[in-house]
Image (tube, rainbow, N blue to C red):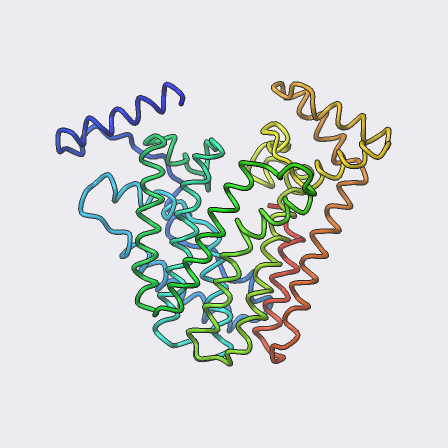
Length: 370
């Protein structure tokens, strides 16, 4: 743990020992506009202005409910619980709940609670992920562990998971069971990423499974909840669940490409960050496999990747070489394939604005640049 983090945690412990909330670090957040305006549903609705307006209205209710559920009487847990919530975000999972709910009665009050529950689970996982990854920034704000230390960040994630469970409990035992299974997959995905593939396992298959668990599982549950709590035909729950899982994988694979090929102004982070942190993304796995098969140009790229990437010049050389190698286009094609398979899973859905919007979402996932 860094000296700064130790100091932050000591400050927290001392203030709590005295029964006071004074002296806590002040978090750095994004501007007020970012905090008060969650992501638009436009990505999900294509050109359907009426649908976008309907979902936007419900998103405002979801946002208010998120703040209500995370309210705490003590200053420290109240600030930490709202830290990432206030920093904004795409609200992709609530959007999906509200969209698939339009396969049934989207006005059912349970829909709002379902949307709140999945976003709380997502937020909770971010606190834990940032500690695991030692990420300094999240959504334009300092990561919670940078402000309050690792222990407080982890406990805040736990607190948000408990709040999500309380909301889900109101939705009934089936919802609780699904949440428990989703939570298990989130944790297993993180553990398996940390441990790496077992000896003799296919590294690419392992990587895809990690993405399915860490990202796809909760997106799948979001889409499924919309069907379940709108009273839609239960036969539609499985197709949208499969869609959600596959589009989640496509989303993360697209992130691999974005890290290599976009500028910092487009993506919000330094290009090649994953390379510097030795994250085994799909292009990296592909180029290592190609080098092992005797591809001389791939071997040259691997040499650059395995060098000391501390300096910006070394990082840029490795990034540019990997981005220019055919394996990056191969990885892009794989992301598109997962998006296409996500759309194929929607064949049982009736034609109409929900299906069209889900198609638009899958396309946007692989076409985005940030």
